[in-house]
Image 1 (cartoon, helix red, strand yellow):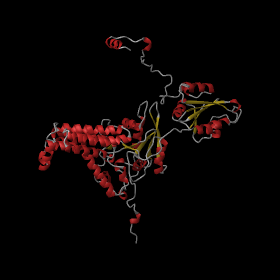
Image 2 (cartoon, rainbow, N blue to C red):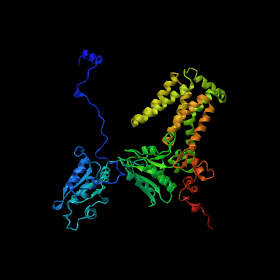
Image 3 (cartoon, rainbow, N blue to C red):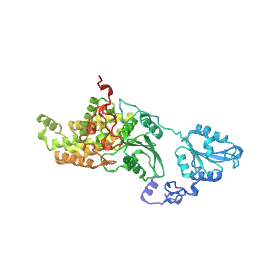
Image 4 (spheres, rainbow, N blue to C red):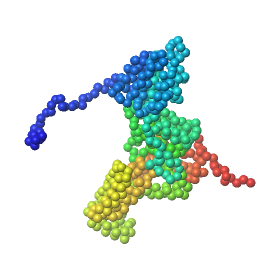
Length: 544
């Protein structure tokens, strides 16, 4: 294309040829097949036909076969010419199980007729299908739902029921170590994306038939499978019913992850702090279930929701349960200081340097003044600039690949901090403040709680720059009122503060010895109040 033609195209509008124009037209919302009819009664068209050809045509049309090329339809001619076919999704089933336990046995079934003994649908499952999990149904929607979840379906000519066989075997991640909740002591297993593997990890720890794994489906189209876990003789029935009501009340087409479910179930969507405890450790889920809580596992998600929770439990680390009492209490004290530093240290620095210089020792005040002598920005601008830079480095480290991300965080922080000090854009003490604040946010046990403190830190910075200590006090008071008014599934978010005489209050801040945890948390109102007897170390009893 010549230069003159380019200039002419820029200056003058020339419509394109009609055949080259593409318009994304509005689609008709009336769909021929809509599987979002779970609450609608089954009609005749949704049932399995007696004629094999009608069933085959219906399946092909519903699955858009053969355009949908991962749909496999295997037609079979059994003995004496009776027709049948198998439907499955390639990549989601075990081909060996389909070949040996389904197709091979179907080819060996003797002749069926109304005059023979084998004329009932269930007899195919009872006498010939060599597979442990099989069921017969006349509802086409149920059959297609199971096929989409990795099962295969068998249709036989002359039978008004289809046969669903569980032959799931899709690729999945193996059980690995926890990545976000690491602990030196305790089990080193983490949840993966497979639903049944995750429930098995919990059942391996809690070996009782009282552990209920109640199946749920979320999403009108996706029908994402999940399991609600609770111990029937411990958990409060009202809590179980409330969790079940909220899960069944989610009205969405597609549900992909457990995080979406938590956002649909929470009472305060704009609260700074989450009302769920999200974990990837089976041992933490098991311990919560024995206390009377309810857990939700979703297929495809490597994390589990535990409810209800409170503010103190979000600050606890999983390693606290495996450390001796002095060590665990020391770790909790360190984390409490880390939380305070990550939320209030920048605001305290601003309040002291701007409004309350009289509380700073004289020589330290001289040092701070000398370091800020050539800095051209006010303290709040300097602080916000460095805090924003630190947050950008943190986000960039998360988005980059593993080795590059860790290198970016270290090198970026060192180079940026040193260059900013050398260029006299910020003072050295500001680098120290930001570094301690960042380390404190990393020491927070729960990742979502660290997000909460990062947002609150900016709020306290603005209040401190406006009113000093008075602004920090007002902000702390308002935040305390907000979280005191919030509830997590009927439990106050600051439990067990109102019940200071209960041992649950001591364990909320410090760790009690394991032999002094006789009672379950009283705010859960469980069926069984005691978890262990008053004297659980019988070897300490003195006998004459």
